[in-house]
Length: 102
Image (cartoon, rainbow, N blue to C red; front, side):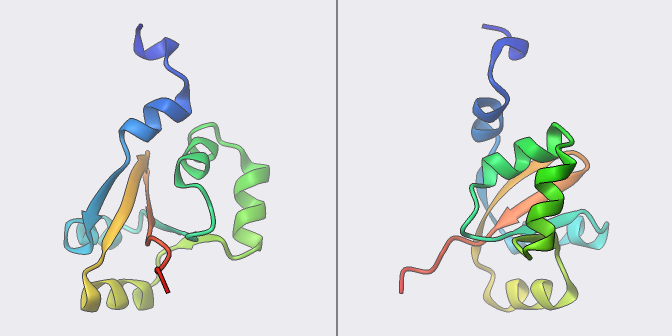
């Protein structure tokens, strides 16, 4: 099976991984880190970015479920250095902090 035959969601799922914030700081400095709410499926969001699905992306942004990472986000991640889920949907790096197990 060639890359062209692999469904986008499957391909993105294989490219998703856990990373520490320290590994993502340089991407934040470039302004390309997007925070994804823990209630959303990271792969679904990444696929919408890759497909340029403006309607879905704008709906999530309007609902506050996705947003460009802020300096406050970066400070919190820097202080705690949590494991984050991340995937690249060029030029964006989408990151998601797993829901807490409260």
